[in-house]
Image (cartoon, rainbow, N blue to C red; front, side, top):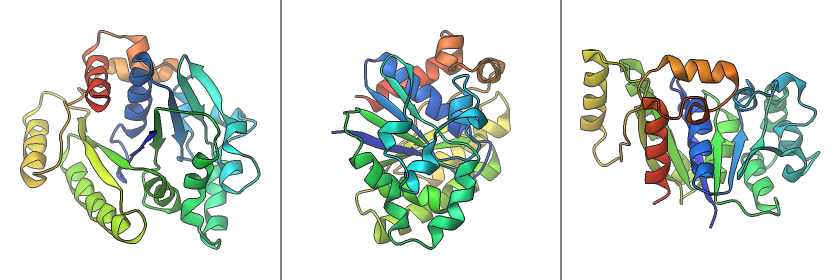
Amino acid sequence: MTRIIACANQKGGSAKTTTTISLGFELAQLGREVLLVDLDPQGHLAEGFGTQALGLEHEISEVLDGKLPLADILIPLRDHLTLAPANIRLSHLEPYLITKARREDRLKNALKSIGRPFDYVLIDCPPSLGIMTVNAFSAAGEILIPMASEFFALIGVGLLLDTVADMRADLNPDLEILGIVPTRMNRTTHARDVVDKAKEELQGYRFFETVPEAVAVRDASAAGVPIGEYQPESPAAIAYRKLAEEIDQ
């Protein structure tokens, strides 16, 4: 069975894309077949692997509007790791989809017809709760929530959990919260207090190991490689490796 995991948080700066890239890379290192799906018009998944999003010949908007099958836009990235990329053209599609029947199932149907097996599909959602995120929640079985270790991020997680409850009732009853990943963790008292408060207020949800704030993560992004490849023994890379191993158990 393919596990489809949406990486979501409507608040920007939560390390959502970094988590998608790093988790996908580490799962591929474990020998799992992984597909990364970008639903963010910024196209940062492609950029995170050294590909200019604006230069893409084909991307996910052509799949969601029915012009191409998903298999036709896939880009191999590393052994066991494949990308369905996005770029700014995806933002132009959203107003078009709003008027279409079953608009929330476009990605779900595309994944069903892909014609090749994947162990994991990781979906990078945009920092909003628009139609692209709804498509991700319709297609996914699980949601992974990266949460920056700051106060306003905690508020955002609470709102997202309310939205997921609504989605489960109205759209996808099988949708589950896989867990919360505290990211961008620094050594301040504020960051520790935020994580402690999150665990107190969100009892019953699984919390994975925190991912530390690190210059190496930004350097890896600038270099267009995952942190696990750029600096595999850095604390952030180790944290994402542990996250992959926990999820894959």
